[in-house]
Length: 97
Image (tube, rainbow, N blue to C red; front, side, top):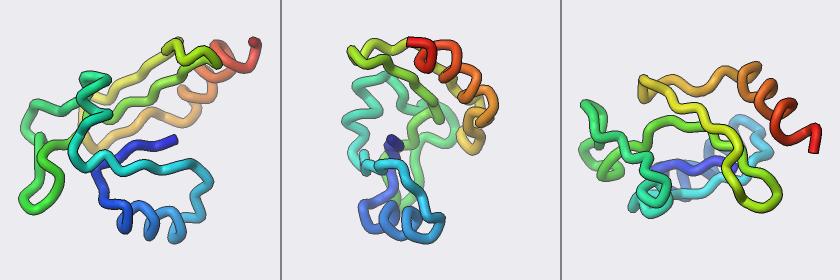
């Protein structure tokens, strides 16, 4: 699942364009972002005409009970977790269950 400040229309367009399979949710008002304490309070905390702020790029793995078992946060708003790093975390924390 991905959560983004993009509008639902933007998410739908990107979902189709890139043939994505993940569920994508719009968090334009940052309700989910704030629940997890992921609001970017730095230089890139919002865009004119866009969402009022940007979340810190974060990858979270939760187990089947909803407990967060692993989290990786980027130090730069344009960078995401390396896919191999996430795959290793999946293998360590979830696949063996």
